[in-house]
Image 1 (cartoon, rainbow, N blue to C red):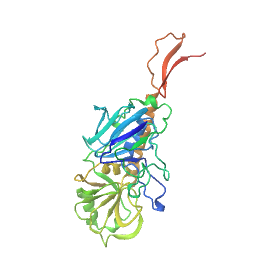
Image 2: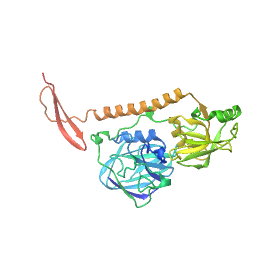
Image 3: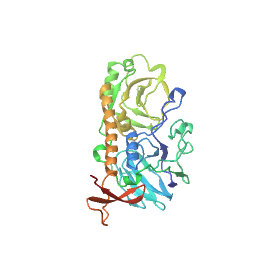
Length: 355
């Protein structure tokens, strides 16, 4: 397929799971802010889970399908989604073709980041092993920048059996939980010993508000001051995804996908992997609370999300192998005759039991 951007929305970029392995050379990871939503969308349209898609922030784009046909799915934030001015379902694959217009506007429910996944993925260059856009350096994605009106972007070749995924939906039980009342689970450290008991208590028992300084690099929070023992500065070291830095002013900063590779502020905790996306789906003015869990509990939560992806892949395989509409024409005795659709073509197949 070939898409033309009619309107770009607030911030629409190409993202996959990120540019891992280059932080030691100073290159941030980037990648999807809600990886679970990206993976689910890719599975629904017949892709591998780690393929690139459009990441949409708050106000989405309007796209015209200029050529070809394929599957699309929108996951993540509860965004308004229409095809040719008709409301389309979220968390489900739908077919589009040349002449269709896809519109994604403001969220109608919780969340601020949605993913428009397309069969065949997006045909943009792979830079350092990833198609992700790192905006600050102009690296990756579509010319290293967010989309703008007039851009044209193509998809790659469809994977085998793609068309058998038409209509596949992600069950409610396999969709990630992003509700506002959920506390953000953290593992304390690596520099939690740099804070007083009062400071740790403040961090875990207080409510913080997301400020307007919130983007793909990180979220600054406003709230009670977290007390250090003897200052906030440390010898610069690596900043893991989800690290909660506390500079000298005592207000936490949560580091996200486009974070710098190293930093010299104390890190009181690190967000559990699933809860990084919980935070990334919130907007300025909303509040967060933190809950300390063990490393083992954090690993278990991450494994649970992986198991959900594995279950959805099994569900897709089952969906694709379902019986298609029987062909009504005569068939040999002791056999069954079916119409089998593969890559958009229909084949008349006779299945006969042999002695």
